[in-house]
Image (cartoon, rainbow, N blue to C red; front, side, top):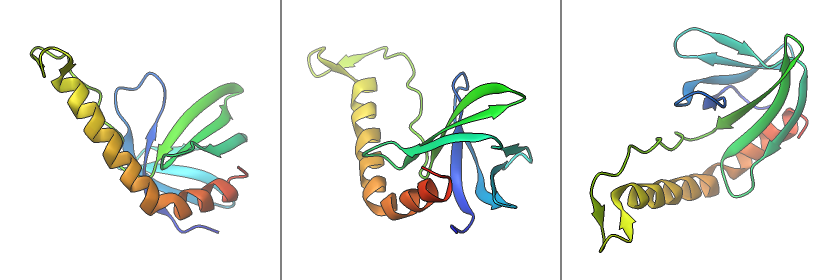
Length: 126
C-alpha cells in the first residue's frame, strides 16, 4: 500500500494542474488539493501509467458520468503563452524551446519516480 504522495491532478478543460496529496482513504483513492477540496476517485474503472512519464491516467465515474484525470508525480508542464518572437532563424520559437526543456525535465523525473508511479498504478488496479 503506497504512502500518501504529493502529486498534481489535472482534468481536461482545466488550465493547470492542482497540487495536493494523493492517498488511499478506506481503500479508495482520494486527492486532497491544497485549496482544501477533496476529490474522491470512487468508481475507479482504470488506472494506467503513461509510458515514459511520471503520470497516471485515471478513468472513473462521478455522479454516473465518466471522467478522466491525469495524476502527475512531478510538476506538470506549464501551458505555453503565444510566441511573439521566433528564434533560431524562425524555425523554433521560444515556446518550442521551453517545451523541449519541459520534456527533458519530465523524462528525468520519470527515471527517478518510476517505482513510485508503478506502485500507485498497481494499488489502483492498473
